Length: 271
Image (tube, rainbow, N blue to C red; front, side, top):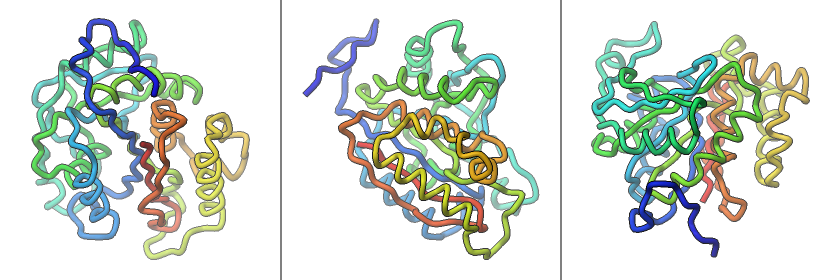
């Protein structure tokens, strides 16, 4: 067994049993309030995992340009960053406490000037729609890391590697996006498009084989990648998760289904 990764300024006695890492296909915000196979599996996942000291969420719905920000607010608000949904969804709140101390540790791991603390922003629906099902009591501290959308895929993977020591301090790292995400072709009740299934299947094979290089270079698939991700916001959280995993981690896929024909809900646990 390898010794824990040292973190400057953190006493070894503060180390906890190593947490797994999750990628969650979050899909529609309605999963926060609807009873369906996806939301039920999130609930079961929260019950079976070790209880974290805090949750760090890297969500497709917080994009920044030129820098990375880490929320360090003590009581983050609930951001309803969508439109056209029922009033019940806008009334939903997730009053989890923030995690300023872990935010500061995360900033130090990432390094300045790569990152800065954000004392204003709350939790977007990529975080609270999932965590509200996993941890409905809202009693586990939650904070978020933004995605610098100006950076190439390799950059995001490298930041994920820098985040890995958080696992040894009780932090559950959650990437929240979708393995396939093309809302322009989404159709209620549609069966998965052939290209959507092909990209999803390719990712499963590459992730199972530990071929992170191929996943980082997903754009080499050309038209298939462009169809699966017209924009990369929902793909990039996966790269943080892959960076934070260990080669010895067990890989488990769940919620392996599609919604709207072009949104993969497939999720992954490492460790």
